[in-house]
Image (cartoon, rainbow, N blue to C red):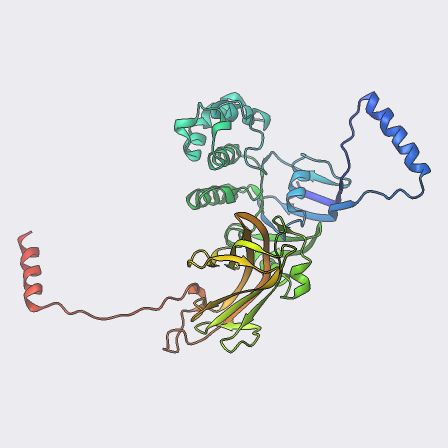
Amino acid sequence: MSDIVIRAENLSKKFTLGSKKQYDTLRDQVAMGFAGFFKSRNQHTESPNVFWALKDLSMEVKRGEVVGLIGRNGAGKSTLLKVLSRITEPTSGFAEIRGRVASLLEVGTGFHAELTGRENIFLNGAILGMKRSEIRRKFDDIVDFAEVHGFIDTPVKHYSSGMYVRLAFAVAAHLEPEILFVDEVLAVGDAAFQRKCLGKMGEVARDGRTIVFVSHNMAAVESLCSTARMLTQGSVTCSGNTKDVIATYLSSIPKVTHEAIGNRTDRRGDGKIRFTDIRFLSEDGIDMEVVQTGKDIQFSVGYESTDRNLKNLEISIDIFAQSGQCMIILNNELVGVNLDSAPSSGRFNCRVERFPLSPGTYYITLFGRVNGSIADWVQQVAMLTVEAGDFFGSGRLPPTTHGGFLVLQEWNLEERSIASRNALCDANMSK
């Protein structure tokens, strides 16, 4: 018997932007037929925009393999899981799955909002192929894992997003599937729940079952996954050892240029401001390619707007480690600096004394809010390379394996008096 449990060959999925869904009623078919007839007679009608979420993707996953799928937003990771889970059909190519599958692709996948948590456990389990006796046997373990004891007989429409995802993950994880698909739903839970989920997936992996895990948390991918696949514009562009694939992915983040940030389409916000570039400046105002730990640095962010008089701005420069952990948030409101108004273009400058991050590579996300509404939010706009510097004035730094945030510190030795030592000895002897 072959060890290959997932095989995809030349898998493609096309979406037509702005198109209407076609229904199989006679009236709709006649209407669409007439529309197609007149379109064919009009030589000047433009075809709709076509977006290929997957394009000629081929990959194989072996039994017991834990695979991380990584890539930028829009790379096709979630679409691939939906195709593999048979939620949506591919436009061309095929995917072959061998084994019992459980999927956790969205918060509360397969749940009915009007049913209680108890009813949804039985419903979701039955949909995924569990017998009623099997669900009853695992019911208490599912509720214990989800930590929703007091709400188990409450309709899930009243659950918070965190309760929703806890229960959804608990059901999927206790089905004992041969293949488990998990999308970036763990980001909804708190840190303790995320650790619990990763621990449960680790147990599933140790049992020899197959996991395909999509996440932007590189630390989770590296700790859980034995191999990884990097997706770019719907195709697998790198595969192999998890650390090597993560390194390739991080190095693919574009360099800092006006054009790279200004033309980014994977951004959120109403557009009242639009970030155009970011520069790293030394204390002398000189552009730097790399930053030295312990040295002063100024972050300078360019922006443009069609509004000539912007009001009440909040600007945030967020610095992340390669693992996905946010290390520093530079935010004007956090330090009590009010940007009550600003012109239609300019630069936001933030100066940091004695830059405190250990040597390594980090990436930067820019966030802007105008009058309480998100104006622009662009993730991973630039890489920040930090080199070693004499932060402590001792010529020493922690080893690279113990990197992170450097903190100024003072040490002293306080010697106890003889009377205090004698009093302590007497107290110990009397016990």
